[in-house]
Length: 395
Ligand code: BEZ
Image 1 (cartoon, rainbow, N blue to C red):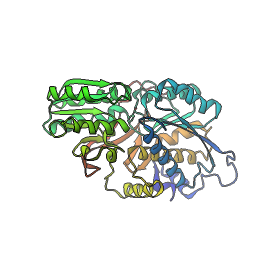
Image 2: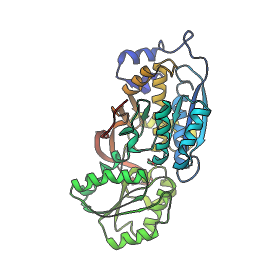
Image 3: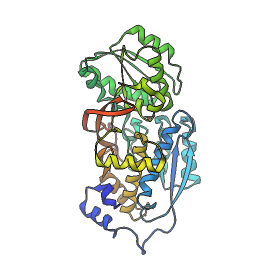
Image 4: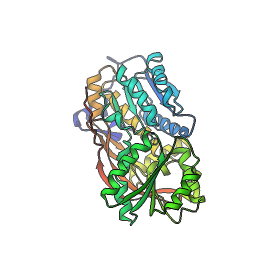
């Protein structure tokens, strides 16, 4: 498959050149050494499955391009970040200082991302964020060498409030893990739900990755809201969905969420997930040739169904291929590399998206409902949604 078919650039000239191969190093000027790529992801703990899906997606995109970046072979380095913020700077430094990676792909957890961000800003290493939605990474602490292929935490929940009110659910309880991702997802919900006419009667939380939900579910039952909205992900999300149903709330109080609630967990959650409505920048059921092709190829390669994390990993791989090809594998050609990454138009399974000035995707947000163990698209909640990028000054 040509570069052109999977990554479109705003510059037709560059895309045409890349597609026909004359920008790629055939012989002269080729970077001979292997390109060193670091993966810093969770491979243990409640986000372990998310880390594996991201890595699968990255590798699949690069394998589809012959397993090379800008004509160079790749040497991979991996660290399990355990979703542990206190080890984040040390782990990222190992990859950058000890292993001398030229690209650092990571991570999933917003708290860990802030450690990576510190190392990325201090060392200038190219940092590609394949999931974590931490606002600061593409707001006040944005940097020319940091690019996100996923979302900001509030970007997803900004679309949730109006969808709930439109269904007549005007009195809600919010519940989440109390760490950056949950708190920032609440920021989006707090902005969108009251603006649409809803009222938030209580904000509940528990520390990440605690899954002792019982006391909070009892409190929700007593509060009798019209709906519950939440942020949970990974193994903890599956347990929350099951516990919600087991507490007898499923058929009484509508459950909504930032879409991570129902990503990659539908087998584990079972029928308890049926009917949950979420907002998200992806859906399994997107009826496009691009998504169908991606899902088929992923299932064939990994014998499992892709989820949003796999898709984001895939897009990270697409972006990296695009950037590396534009500089013929010379990752030190930073101005040209950044220009290519900034102007990429990613032809993604989620739909085409572009980079904002703060290096975060501008993308459609879908409304989905779980039906028969699938996240079915039931509408577009927001078109070409951008994060505010507030406070971002590229140095
Ligand atoms: C986060 O920590 O940013 C995050 C983790 C899992 C899913 C979505 C966001």
